[in-house]
Amino acid sequence: MHPLPITMQAIEITKPGSPEVLKIQERPLPRIRENEVLIQVYAAGINRPDVMQRAGLYPPPAGVTDIPGLEVSGVIVSAGSKVANWKIGDSVCALVAGGGYAEYVNAPESQCLPIPEGLTFREAASLPETYFTVWSNVFDRAQLTEQETILVHGGSSGIGTTAIQLCKALGRKIFVTAGSDEKCHACEAIGATKAINYRNEDFVERILALTDNKGVNVIIDMVAGDYIQRDLKCLADDGRIVIIAFLGGVKTNLNMTEILRRRLTITGSTLRPRSTKFKSNIASSLRNKVWPLLEAKVIETMIFKSFPLEHAAEAHRLMESSEHIGKIILDVYDQS
Image (cartoon, rainbow, N blue to C red; front, side):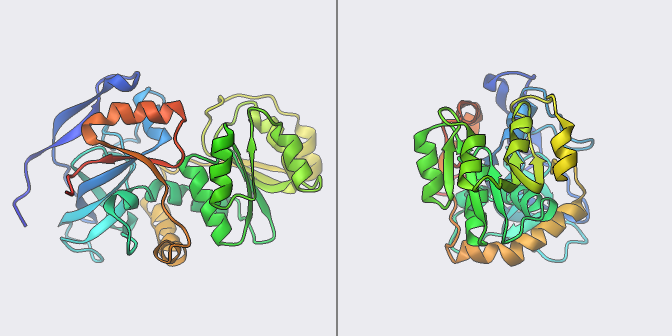
């Protein structure tokens, strides 16, 4: 193993604003704590929270680097004194609280997972943020059972395509919304029971028609705003809405009558500020229940496009255009 450099290339948010504020800069290598590993990053995933951070709407938690990026894949090049489960040279993917858009990043050892057999570094980088988020919200928080149905808004997003494949693999019926016929066809091709084009169909009417007016048991909502009142009309009795983002706004007016009368639940969560212990529990569930499905090709990664690290601004423009189906990736280390 070659000696580690003192500095690295990283993407910096030079000021809050449009994608052009993302610039490649030289930064010192991260220092690792006793329970952390240092990963030489081969690839990093692009996610909506990165876009929000760049715009000044989602500051990193206290003590976390200002470098964006929440998921990476790569090779461990250094390990803290209390790291027990990984060694230098191991290939991993990892969920990080920030710092993924860089040549090196530190990660708690318990938030690292082996790269599923048969997957490339680029494919592995598309896994952590979406799979941690979907598992935590669909199966832990919402407690979706085999007999229940789910609606996910944003079906063609990284979260949406992950939820579709995971729900299908685990025997759950899933409906989604998407913004074009092309996206709807793509969602149905990977396992959505039905994809609804919200631009030309009323998703409330369609969901009620598709469920014999019973409604769905769980809704994963990344839009919020005015969608919440409409979501309530889509829910079965004792149904649950889990809000994971608010692309449609942070405020809405609610009629509480239906919530009380039909015992409905509105909850929400964000993963980034949660404790390492919380995230490590999700990692354990994924390794035991989901990674075998990836290795068996029951679930496959969906990467729409990748960009070199220095083209992070272009990757963010694509994310904001919502033209993608699946994940957008930054290639950090030349694997040719």
